[in-house]
Amino acid sequence: MSARTPENNAPHRAGFACFVGRPNAGKSTLTNALVGQKVAITSNRPQTTRHTVRGIVHREDAQLILVDTPGLHKPRTLLGERLNDVVRTTWAEVDVIGFCLPADQKLGPGDKFIIKELAGIKKTPKIAIITKTDLVASKTLAEQLLAVSRLGEELGFEWAEIVPVSAVKGDQVELLADLIAPLLPVSPPLYPEGDLTDEPEMVMVAELIREAALEGVRDELPHSIAVVVEEMLPREDRPADRPLLDIHANVYIERPSQKGIIIGPQGKRLKEVGTKSRKHIEALLGTPVYLDLHVKVAKDWQRDPKQLRKLGF
Ligand SMILES: Nc1nc2c(ncn2[C@@H]2O[C@H](COP(=O)(O)OP(=O)(O)OP(=O)(O)O)[C@@H](O)[C@H]2O)c(=O)[nH]1
Image 1 (cartoon, protein in one colour):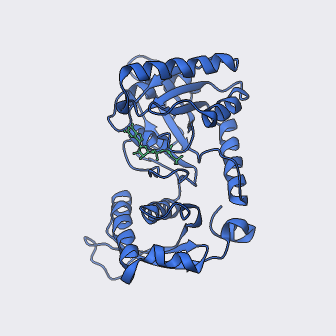
Image 2 (cartoon, rainbow, N blue to C red):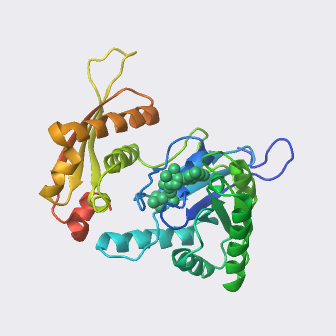
Image 3 (cartoon, rainbow, N blue to C red):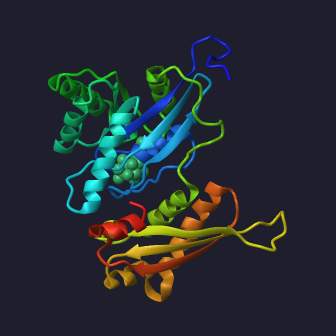
């Protein structure tokens, strides 16, 4: 395959970019908007992105592989420490780092903590992305642009670009890809066209179930939920034009007392979780799915290295 695009003879580029920023900054939504399909997990609850999900943007001139990391935060548990390690490892490996700052939130200590860490990664170009621009007036946006530019200066580095975007409205999302592309190394595509992610399907399915399970539950619960897909098998004896994929998954919680919250009265909540996540899974895999969900207690799994490994951390 040639590493040049036909029209302008510019070399083809390919590489990795990751979005960083405080929880809820809009990183997953932006990844999805760039890729054009739901691959990253979005939620209005902080720190729901556990796995490094990659979205792949295929363009004529470049291939952008987006690595979505969990938020960097003060570790309270073994899981927290592992998450921070994952973040730092990712940062050191990518070609471009996009720092996401929501337009509707003041630049706070959390952002400064992250930007300070970024300043230490000298070689990698850093783009400041002001997200959720649809939520603010242009004056607020202008102030935010200025604030982030000044903070870079204070910390002794210059942003390669500063871009305002709205992933929800699709404003400037294409422009962001245009700006990232030239910062990637000259390279032929690294993934076959059509691949949107290389995350194993079972992990993505587990994330979709976890996302549905998190919706509307009490604040202390999110960190206590883990989902493991035990089995994904095509149902036998189905006509070729009516396939069915059987998926068996376990939803793990930490304490027996949390069971009721997840399952709900007469199993109503769990049923809703199943219905909702099944729709997303079917859209992702492009096949009808029978989803079998079980709730299990794995006592204090966040503090137990053995259990963490079993649950995929
Ligand atoms: N209005 C508006 N809301 C947005 C936009 N982008 C994201 N959001 C919302 O902001 C919330 C957080 O978005 P996510 O994409 O999950 O944020 P994240 O940074 O990936 O969050 P973590 O996974 O917790 O680190 C969700 O409720 C999104 O719908 C945007 O462009 N406009």
